[in-house]
Structures are given as C-alpha cells and as structure tokens.
Length: 320
Ligand SMILES: Cc1cc2nc3c(=O)[nH]c(=O)nc-3n(C[C@H](O)[C@H](O)[C@H](O)COP(=O)(O)OP(=O)(O)OC[C@H]3O[C@@H](n4cnc5c(N)ncnc54)[C@H](O)[C@@H]3O)c2cc1C
Image (tube, rainbow, N blue to C red; front, side, top):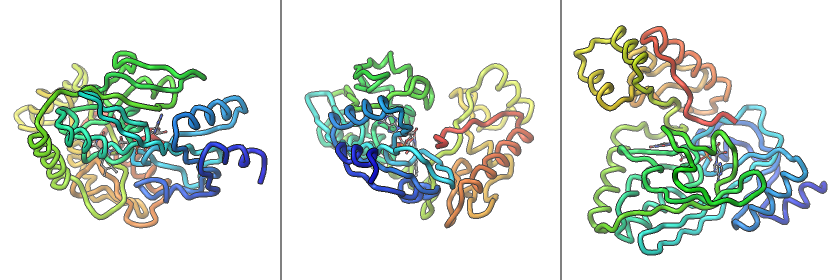
C-alpha cells in the first residue's frame, strides 16, 4: 500500500478500483481508483484539508443518481458522503449531507412538518439535492433551506439561503465548488396525516410518469426558460393554440421531455442506451450501455430538438 492509501484509510473506509457502474444509478462507467466513504463530518473536513494540502484530485459522490461517469474511470479519489444523521428540532430538520433525501422527507412528515413531503421520491442524498437545487411537484430545495454548512476554500462556512444563490437546478456550489456538510431546512408546522397524503401523491405521480425497470439518472436535460427570444422561437415552430405550448408560456418553462418527444426521439437507441418511450427526458441503460453510447445519444437528441424547435437543450446531469 502506498502512502496515499494508508493516509486515506485514517479518514474512512477505503475501496480500490470500484466500478462507477456500481456507484451510480445509471450503472455506467469504468473504475474509480479510490473510493473513500466518510461517515463523520469531522473526518470529512480532515480528509478535505489533507487532499487539498497534498494537491490530490478528488470528487464528491452522494447517491450517484445525477451523474454520468466515463468508461475509462477516474484516477483521483471519489469521496462518498456517508454521514447520515438527521435531527428534528422544533420546525427545523438538520441533515448531514449523506442523509438520503427521501429519509429526510420521511422524518419531516413523521414530525408533522409541512413543506418537504415532495422529497420522498427523489433518489440520492440531501447534499446532492442541495447542490443541484433538486425539485419536484412544483417545489425545490431552495424553498425550505435556511442554512448550509459547507467546506469552501479550506474553511467551514455557514451559508444562508441567499448566499447559496439558488436558481433552476443551480446553486452557488456549482460555480464556486465546495463540499456540502450539513443542510438545515426550516419547515412550517403541519399535520402528519396531511403531509403523508402529499408524500403518497408525490410517489404516485412519479410512478405514473417515470419509466420503471431500467437504470437511469433521472432527467438528462433541464427544461428551457421561456425568455422573450425562446418564446418567439417556440411560437415559430409550434402552434400557439396548442394547450401544451400555452401552458409552457404560462409557467415560464418548456418541458425538455416534450421537446424530445416532438423531435421524434422517444425510443431512439445508440448501443444499449435508449430514450425512454414513457418519459422523453430519461435515457435508459438497457444493459451494459457505455458512457460513449449515452454521449452519442445526447448529441443526437440535442441536434434533433434544435432542428425541430430551434431550441437548445442543456444537460442537467453532472458529467464526471
Ligand atoms: C429515477 C430518478 C428520478 C429522479 N427524480 C428527480 C426529481 O424528481 N427531481 C430532481 O431534481 N432530480 C431527480 N433525479 C436526479 C437526482 O436524484 C437528484 O439530482 C439528486 O438530488 C442527486 O443527489 P445524489 O446524492 O445522487 O447526487 P450525485 O449524483 O451523487 O452527485 C451529483 C452532483 O453533486 C455533487 N455532490 C454530491 N454530494 C455533494 C456534497 N456533499 N457536496 C458537494 N457536492 C456534492 C457531485 O459531485 C455531483 O457533481 C432523479 C434521478 C433518478 C435516477
């Protein structure tokens, strides 16, 4: 064992050459040279200080439900956030970054707190959800986050909601980097039975609208903002009387899944990667799909959507 692996072991559980296919919900990607699972915030900070000091390349992994890893793997250290404590104190829920988003939602529902029931169906960790400002059922992380503890540029900081600079599937962490350590949600007092109803509705909706049975990484592309320019483009390519088009203009977002469907890309395949025929914004791994298959399919989708609608799709997923 070399010095690096010996030291990494002092921070958590170390595994060598683990395939990204085992680390991500997409089940795609080559070997990660080191995977370090860290289950305490103190050890996480110590590990980050060490890696920064040594100039060792690393990346964070939550649930691996929003990423596409390369076939050739990753030569640095994959740090798996495994600190999972969730505390409910009055109207606040304080969760370590590695807590499952669904579990945080369940705890909030159980405590009769209102606002986060939508999180029950979102795969992955609260740290990953925070970074990408995950959302569903018309809500987003930004609606209920009161503060975030994070390791940024060598320091542990507490950021307010405003300082997180949330946007659609965006937070400051996407631009400034940093590692999310703990997330605090401040919710409203509610009724546990009522919240449970909302949670079940969220799960039912997901069940009815998302493909089942194959590995995926959720929505590949962001929905498109209806800016003045995009609105003109949309109306040039589609019938203004179309109910869907009217709805998109009303809510200010054009569904990427709908655009993909309009471009005739549902069911299109490259290798073992296929556009779901249930939800156009999902690419499914039909078995042993490669990262190259997915990248080629992504390019084909973008081209087809641009040709059909004049609009340009942008990836929502993190490409390692
Ligand atoms: C079937 C399915 C359904 C989905 N439905 C939804 C949905 O309804 N709404 C939605 O928004 N998303 C959805 N997603 C996408 C995904 O679940 C979310 O984006 C989720 O919040 C990602 O969390 P994760 O822990 O898996 O992140 P990962 O995929 O592990 O990581 C995503 C990014 O965050 C970074 N990261 C992870 N943890 C940290 C940390 N502690 N600090 C700093 N950076 C970190 C990673 O480095 C990476 O860049 C779905 C995915 C699937 C597979």
